[in-house]
Length: 231
Image (cartoon, one colour):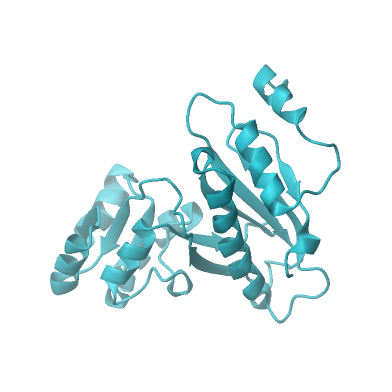
């Protein structure tokens, strides 16, 4: 597929085969953001693990110091007092069986993250096969199955993101918007990388961080020097 002129111009800013320090890479990312909208800056982290093995899973959540720049829509499965608590904390949608029904019958997905109180997991489990493939199933490791719905919603709204491996052992996450500038993006980068490095499974052998690439929505990938990151 032929890339457009803006993409070609962005590629000219990069040295072929060079591994950049993270701050330099994020500075370049901002320069490659040439679209007419505020592009999202994404990170792709390839790890030296095998996600097929339970003891080599890498999954968790981290609050990015500067948020993601995106308004995250939160759906909460809760009843009675916890439902009222969720509404007061700023949840976009709160319910129980009614929301399960809406998702099943209307194929409704106007939300980005699902939070559930532990007692609701039996209900949420009915749509596990629908939520799971979309990465929306609540999970205790990500802090989205919790009795403390106020804290969960507050963290999500202030920039908490979940990271997890895909089938090719790569983590894909947003780092923020190009308009954040290099400094704020670097702070978010450091927070995420620190969490991923700490989450290294004991069963992982050899080089853990295989490659780290940053890119805007429409721009070329910029490779980061992993040797400078503790991993």
